[in-house]
Length: 118
Length: 112
Image 1 (tube, chains in turn yellow, green):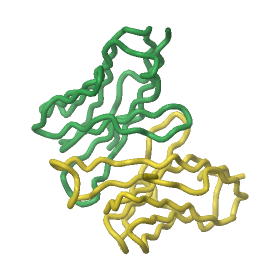
Image 2 (image 1 turned 90 degrees about the horizontal axis):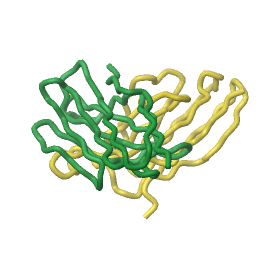
Image 3 (image 1 turned 180 degrees about the horizontal axis):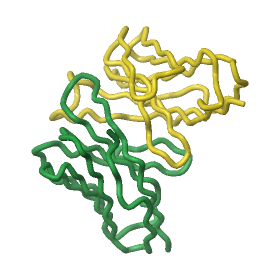
């Protein structure tokens, strides 16, 4: 049981380049999330999805786009990378309203993608 | 609004106890606690729900004071494996999205 898998694990981009981060989960979870974590700081929500075909903005959505074409996958895109987007990106998934025992909608995290934009 | 964690860092000797606090200015439905080791993903520890019980896992337990909108994480008889950064994540309501707002983290170092 792999849980939440993120690819790639590391990436270096030049300013202005584009890339897509892939998140895949095998737990049949409804909800999926993308966070960024800057050094010495907590997690900030970029975008999230409450089901296949749906996406919504989080706390820091500017400069990012997402898609959830399949329930198990959640893609994060950077159209024109900037040095301010250098960070560690984490994907997470949770059962959603339909799942979760006693309303405990626990989020499970992937191992992260370390992105540097030069 | 981001919850406030205190202290920002704590150094312990093996066997000592510590308390980490997480305070919110908004009414909360739940508080989630995670531990993250350096270079790794956050790992879920426990969840406290409004109206729920105090939770415990091994020698780590937590409580939720609904009146104060504050949760506390208790590390009892700390072990070397307890080292890491502890984050609280707060949820304002049981609504679509289960969006968590995370605190800035508390760094815990347990020394032999």
